[in-house]
Image (cartoon, rainbow, N blue to C red):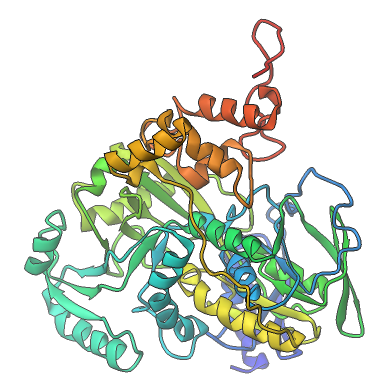
Length: 570
């Protein structure tokens, strides 16, 4: 569709309040609208799926005040004058996997993350599914990477010592009359699109495997290659292996500006000083378009999308062992995507979700009750005995789609020394290992870097008592009695494991930092018993009073003082 036709369409819909122009092979939208859903709808109206001609949405949203990016409280000069070969912006799955792959070469790699820990954005707030790619068609970057990356997961998780389960996935259908068209779809995906594990399984056979699936399910599309992984544990493992191989990670470090001369980034300003990189890799998630703008290379826009998941008690994990969702346009809970599903997590809980809701707030991860209600309404069709009473916690993440609903993995178009890894939403967790390999190879070739013969792909995770036999535990405790002191009874986490995490390559001495690495506080009681003990262990390790220990960041104190007016020492 040409620009004139687009403008006619926009005029009909918005009465002249929005116009489109073609600039530098981008469709640029301008105007003012007071409803966010209209801002997004205008962008989607002008976008073509998987197109390299991206929509840059500069429509002013007048319905709310612009919310500035959350900034770290830390300000110092620790990085001032630093000259890395590669500066990676963003500590999610993309940034950390690329950092690890770059250490296969003789390069000085510096990764910046503005939060107090890694994987605090979408990379740590998703369902952890390793997708098979059955819903992806040829022509997209998502399809290009999905099967190759899916096959890499056994090796990558083995190298990084991260638990991974191939649970299998079922897309369930209630009408037997759909069998022939869905079978044709399955064959198309299997033989044309390369999703070779796609099969049809009839309802009775499915219920033999998963007895709690709705008795009215007629058949399902099956993909055994689908699996589950802990997304934040994978990100941390990638980063720790990167540090082991010489990369550096700077937390609480936000990019605030760039100096660009003659189409090249000369310097990058942060709250910790000015850095002078040879190459910048943009993995900034919901802020990746802002980083592109700073670099004078903005050719796409991100429209944030919220998704809410619920975690159920582990007793529910014994009732269902795979990933499943009912499919149908009329089912409740359908927003932008298929409406989420039920997933058996790698830690043996059940996870229900997510939904998909457009939002102008890039960092608002509050959970709304209607999101939970919407997802459960749908997934009870899949598994009727599903109950909100089994929820032990819930969380919301904000994804970073482009209007073209595809990844952006390419060099800068105007600025020479920036590489964009943007628009990374589902299945971005799945595709990360393959994307990281390609980006690292391109960056190394551009920098003419030599291979690092000393690169070690192996990361050894600390001992995990919950996965050990009684004999293995006894042997470990005999070597170090700290492993015999159980701090979290729900998840069987010991004092020794917490001290291991505090001595890890990337130490994050906060209650949430320990929680993400080891799971104390993720059980049924949600930290009601173990959080004070974890806080005390951190204080002892740091040699500080309890008032200096934080939940997640510098702005989240746990203890404010003694009730009796005494100092809250360890």
